[in-house]
Length: 367
Ligand code: AMP
Image (cartoon, rainbow, N blue to C red; front, side, top):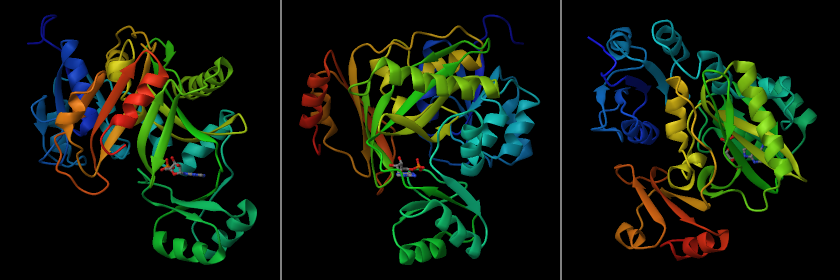
């Protein structure tokens, strides 16, 4: 029997590092967790029950959903049909409609445009002659992307010449494609926002992100030279997205900034890598605030405590023992086996000034 003293169990679709950090935050709020993930080796091992089955397996969905207070997901490529099935049985956030918009780059860009957020020029197509027309309209350089299942720079090619356009089309052909104008951005920024069940919105300060080979390497929080006006502009964009979708939970939007103007690149209806710094660097982490939102609790403060830098550990581990001896450092190890391009963990550095964070960052092995 469930009574007021029984800890609420939250279901998470996906048991990778985001699920792991959600559960770590949730345990402090007295929550317990159940994960659904087809992988046998999971980063969230030991942090809750694990239903090890395909996301489409109806029996597994039934078993997973039994007795849960709320369900959420840690990545956007979970099948929409399964999410809709679960949402009919258990309160599920962010709602399937948000997932639908975020799963497909065409829907996403069309949605941003529809709520008045500037985006790069874009065009979708199926056939070769339509591709040529799209290049004619958008011009080169451009970025050819798959509409779905792109992440960490996968499923996209920058094209600068007609020859590169041919090669890229051959390589990505077979999937619905999408062409986007190349934005020679000054920098990349993201905002992590959260909206409660009652519709209250809170925002973390904009973060500056550095990618290499399409993978996030470094986030600096708050973004250097952040003006109040830029922060307000990004908050306005995030608020419009969330209000339109009647969104509940954490939302991340990645922007390019060029000549002071923000262009939305993509959104993630979930906790996000560029918000990991909030564990040590903000009053309330993105993980705690996401759980607060999806379970109907009041939101916590999103204020930064000082300055932070989050450095992803990708492909291979640095000397973690040496890293741990540094002041103001927190090491998060996802317990994964090293593999090229794989996110194995992250390091967050916090200090009272950006200069000190930068000094520490340059001392990191491999910096
Ligand atoms: P995405 O998977 O769309 O987030 O892209 C990964 C990274 O590729 C981005 O963070 C950018 O660094 C780069 N990128 C993607 N789209 C564009 C674009 N339209 N113009 C310039 N760079 C891009």
